[in-house]
Amino acid sequence: MRHQGTGSEVRPRHGHRVHRRVPAAPRPVPEPGGLVPGPDRRDRTQTRRTARGPARDPGQPLPAGPAPHGRPVAPRVRHVVRHRPDRRLAPQVPCPHDGLRPSAHPAHHVARRRALRGGVGGLPPRVAQAARGAGTAAAHPAEGGRGAVIEELLPQSVVAVEAFGHDGADTPLFPEEAALVARAVDKRRREFAVVRSCARRAMEKLGVPPQPILPGERGAPGWPPGLAGSMTHCDGYCAAALVRAADLASLGIDAEAHGPLPEGVLPSVSLPSEAERLRRLAARRPDIHWDRLLFSAKESVYKAWFPLTGQWLDFMEADIELTEDGAFRAALLVPGPLVGGRRLDHFAGRWTAQRGLVATAIAVPHA
Image: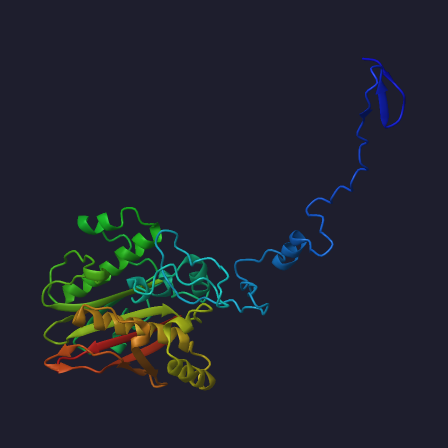
């Protein structure tokens, strides 16, 4: 078809009018990385980029997240948990109540009510990193013989055997023990072997033939009939304490690297009254990391409690008062165990700080 005319109106030969669309003027191209804001809108991409800020190193504190009402939210960790599938704390997620996302475990889960078996070394890697940096026990036997840390805290009837560094790591395990750590990392297998080597040497001193030490209910070590005991290990140190059941009702020992607890742990394991007492102790004796000592005492309380009751004991169910003379008292805030027909309302223990360690021990006598 042949057209006649120019401009926006074109008239074909048969007389009908046809209007040709004139292209609109080109719009400005938006800059990369952002959206063109409307007359009363902000560039959301730029807002997010500004609020996020530069990346932070793992050792730096978490940034304060935004709150719905516009006030900044102080970052914090509400619960200390050991979540086996991913072995880390839940990531920071803003909540409607000005806080971070709660624990990966519900409130009724046993991981929220149990002691942290293995001490702070059992925490997720990012939290435990600060604990490991606080210092470890010397990687050699103690001068003057073994048994210089835990043994001095216990009665004469208790046999305590301790190992520093990797002493005893080559001791063979019983087949049923080896099966439990067949897929564990080297550090876990080494500590597992060393602490059992200590326990079997203690058995020999009590005249009991060496035998497997397998975890029983809730992970508590299963001792031969007629014996009571407790084990502990941290970086560079392992110990086991055993006693004849006729001499003591229960034992609990714990050792930790002598350094401050990672940030955010103390509020999760201490009562307000305990935290206040720790502040006063720190003012008088700043050479002691009292928060770490309190944590160790809580572990010893749990280890002495569980064989007598078979029940969990929450961190908040024992009020511990530490004294500068190397003693502590743990008031039980729940009904205590029956020992010799008498219900206990507290445990008494002792503590020490030496060789880069803090150690606590509880011996529960028969009534």
